[in-house]
Amino acid sequence: MATNRNKLIHAALFTPTSNGWGLPLLFWASPGCGKSAILEGVAKAVGLPLEVLSPGERGEGAFGVTPVPSADGTLMTYPAPDWTGNMANGGIVFLDELSTAPPALQPPILGLALSKRIGGSYLGPRVRIIAAANPTEEAAGGWDLAPPLANRFGHLDWAMPDSEEWSDWLLGSIDDEEVTPIDALKEEARVMAAWDEPWAETRGLIAAFIRSRPELLHKQPSLGHPDSSRAWPSHRTWEMAARAYTAGAVHGMSDRDRDEFVGSFIGMGAVSELVSFAKKNDLPKPLDVLTGKVDFKHSNKRLDRTYAVMSSCASYVTSKTVSEDSKRQKELAAKLFEIIAEVAEEAIDLVYPATKLLTDTDLYKVSPTAKAVMRKILPVAQKISGRKAR
Image (cartoon, rainbow, N blue to C red; front, side, top):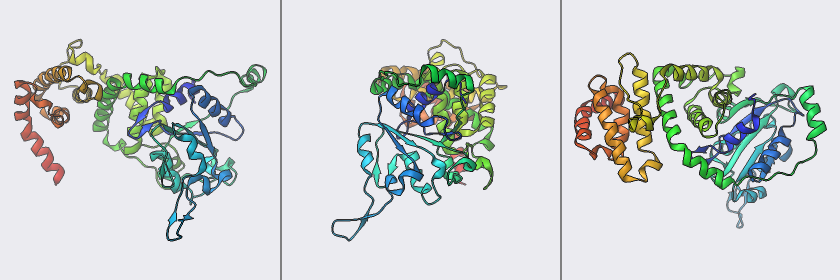
């Protein structure tokens, strides 16, 4: 377990995703180690309401899958449970004892975990999902998680406090302390203001890594294998891992905590290889390359590095923050096209993804150099499209 558990949870709650806020985490631990109490403390600290749902205790009604006849009796509807009203302005849904969810209830939880849907209702972008589970052999009426459900969470082991830690808590922290919550909206704004450059850097890094290790893009354990209910690499979890990697930078996490956070989605084996790849390639920050602070030069001996740098720079130039300043975006795009032109002389295939991203936003019109690069790359793009079509 990470040395700073609360900071890891905070990072997960304040990571932006394609449908709002929060990366879904699932903590595994034996019964009675205080998971619920700690999550209640985290919710207070971030100023968000908490709703605890235990499949074994609350039943199907709490998950919006109990059909109710319409007023005229002609249709069966799935009204939102009463508790969803508490989530109108955001909150945390804590799925406690998830391993007590029988197979029949796990499919509805799929939508809750990934899309924040409960029955026929959308909870909203500011609702976060956190879960906890006991190992199947220790759960009351426990069930293994089906691979599709397991693959929607980051999996972390919840370390039991040792005797000294527990004694210190009993003597000093057992009574509730007054907590002054942070302003969640301000924290969301802070994260978004800092997000674009490390997100662009991460996207370039992981795209280059998967390009070099395609067998790790989707590596599902065989059915019945214990790892099928835990973390494993898939197209879905690699996106989550990319967001977790970026969150590590935005939230100032240690390398150890960041790697555990990322590994919770794709497994520690995959994250170890990713970290080794990053260290080997020593990637510069996109803005440093685009402003000339780093004089990037392509090397035929480091093709993965070139691919990662070109991709991360293009991701940054087309990011929301940069696109809000049209003049600056055009200046950065023009500089990137100058670098792309040099690389294209020796390795035109490595700059195709970056060039395509710029082209999709019409940034190829920024300079004569950009237009010349497009004329050179267009035949390559057509060949690549032809290969994909076949």
